Image (cartoon, rainbow, N blue to C red; front, top):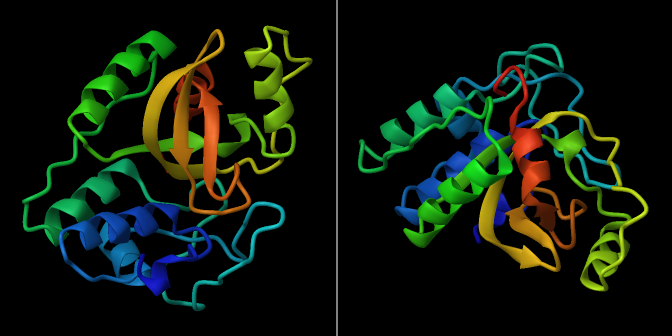
Amino acid sequence: MREDLLVQLDGLCGAYWVARIAGELGIVIDQLDAARLAGTTVCEPGVVPEGARSALVPSGSLPSAGLLEAGTSVAGLVAALARLSEHRLSALPLPASGLTGEMLGRVLSLALEREAWVLANVDAGLLLGRADQREYWAALVAGRDPSGRPRPAWRVGHWVRVLARGELGREEVVLLEETYDVLGQGGVSLQPLEVLARALARAGGR
């Protein structure tokens, strides 16, 4: 991976993925320029997960907004990808409202079978946190009921990539690639499919 994409700039998770996908086409664009194309706004100071290294966006380089309004919209991300690729890339946004785990699973299977990039704009606070993930999944595999689902304190809108879908014990699961190594294990997070569906059903779209 390019060195400038090893660390996500604060608040630019959507722009980070635009730059990553553009790189697959041999188009080199940094996160700031991708953010400008996508109409990204930022809050100051940036908010990062506990334990993550902050990588501040240069002051004044992007429009600012409050914490709940800042970020990259779905429409902005789609438009940036189309413009960068000169419409060689086609992004298909799907509404998350009313999306059940079963419906989401079918969509993910179709997309992943075709080796499409699947990005999800989630409420990060509804995903399983890192600290107790191992114990939670170990209990499921052993046929025990977990004592409770761990919750992270990081309650923001966040863009992640869905890498795979499968089953673990009795649970349908998805494998997510994060933009921060401290989320999950080394930037990869295993989540129940139903949890992802709930995390997608968030207001604001950023």
